[in-house]
Length: 578
Image (cartoon, rainbow, N blue to C red; front, top):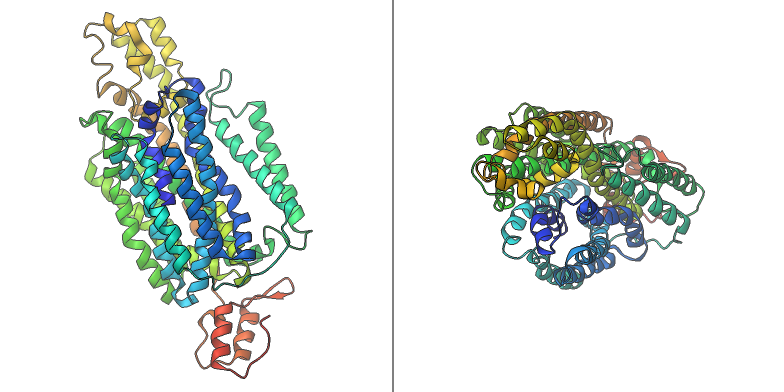
C-alpha cells in the first residue's frame, strides 16, 4: 500500500496538475512539483528511526497498527481536495507530509516484526516475500496510476483506503507482538538534531536542482549551501550526542557489526541506482519513446507503466528464490551477484539508442529487476541477522532511513547529472530547430533559455510545452504550428541532449552498484552460532558466538532465537540471556 502510493503519485502528476489547474512549466510551480514527489519521502526518512525505537519500547505491532490508521486517514483527506491553484497544491503537499508519518510507522516496524517471527534459517525467505510486496508495489503503482488518473485523479489516493481499513482491522486482530520489549528513556536531543539535520540536508538537495539566478541549478544558492552545511554539522553533532547518552536513538555500536555496516552501505547504493532508474525510465518512455511511436501525450503515463512491467517481473521472479536459497547457502554470493548483474544492466541500457527496439529494452530492464531481486532479500536478512533482538526496531529503522533517504538523494543526484548533460547541448539544439521551423530568432532564443529542469519536467510529465510557450506565434507558421505541437517534434528535439545526460547518470549508477558489490563482499560470514547443530549444548553455542561473532563493546550479542531453541533443548539451563 505504501510503496504503490509513492509511485502512483509520480505517474499521475500530469493529471494532478491539470486537476488543480496548475501549470507545471511555471517556474513558481517547480517547488510544488518537487514537494508532491518528495515531501512523503523526506518525512518518512526522518521519522523511521524514532518510530523503530518507540516500537522497541512500547511494542512493534502497536506502532505498526497505528501506521495503517494514519495512512488510511490521510488517503481520505487527500481525495477530498476541493481547492485549485496554490491552495490545492499546499493541501496535497501538507497531507502527503502527514501521510509520511503513517508510512514511517509501517516501514520502521514491518521488518522487525518479521525478524521476530521467523527463525534465522527462514528469515531470508520471509524478508524476500516482504521485499516483493514493497519493491514490486513501487512499480505496480505506475500501472495503477496510469489507469486511474485519467479517469479521476483523486482515485489514486482513494485506492489505498479499503486496503488500509482492512489492514488496520486485520493487524489489530491477528498480529501478536513476540519481540523483546525494552523500556528506555527517549533521546530528545538525539531526535531533535537528527530530524533537523536530515531535513536540512534533504531540503537543500531539493532546492539544489532548481534554477538560481542565471544558473541552471541552485547549488550556488547561499540558502542551499547553508542548508547542506548546516545539515552536515547537525548530523555530526547528532553522532557525538549518540556516543554520550545512556539510551541513544541510533545504536552506533551496531555499526561495529561488519555485516550491519557493509550491508547498509550496499543497500543505500543500490537503492540510489534503483530510484534513479525509475525516474529516468519514466522520462525516457513518456517524453520520448512513446510519442515517437504514435502515443498521444495523454496516453503516455498509462503505457509507460505497462512497458515497465518487465522490470517488476524480473524482481518478482528472483526475490523469493534468492531469499530461499540464501537461507541455505548464505547471502553473500547473492548480494554480490545481484549488485553486479544490476551494474551490467545499467551499462547495457546506456548503449541503447534513444529510439530503441522494445524487445531489447524489455530484456535489459528484466535483467535489472532480476539483479535487484537477487540482492534485496539476502541483503535485508544479512543486516537484520546482525542486530540483537532488543534493538531490531531501531536497527530496521536505521536501515529504512538509509533506503528512504536514498530516494531523495537519487532525485538530487540523477536530476543534477541529467540537467548538467542537457545544459551542454539543449539550448543550441532547441534554438536551431525552432528557427528551422519558422519561429522568429528572438523568440527562439528566449525559449532556448528555458531552464533545463523545466524541459526535464515536461518530459517527465509527458507534456509538450510548445503550444503554451509559442502562443500566438503558432498561427503565423505555415502549418499553424501543427508540427511543433505534434507527437514527434518535442521528442526528437530532446532525444540527443537527453541521451547525453542519460549516459552520465547511468555511469553513476554503474559505479554505485560496483561499490555495493564490493561492500557486500566485506560483510563476512555469520558466526557459527547461526547454523548451530541440533545436538550442540548451550555452552558450546555461546562459545561459538563469542568466538566468531565477537564482542560489541563489552556486550555479548547473541541471537535470541538460537538461545531460546537451545534453552528448550536443554531445559536444565537456567542462566539468564546475556
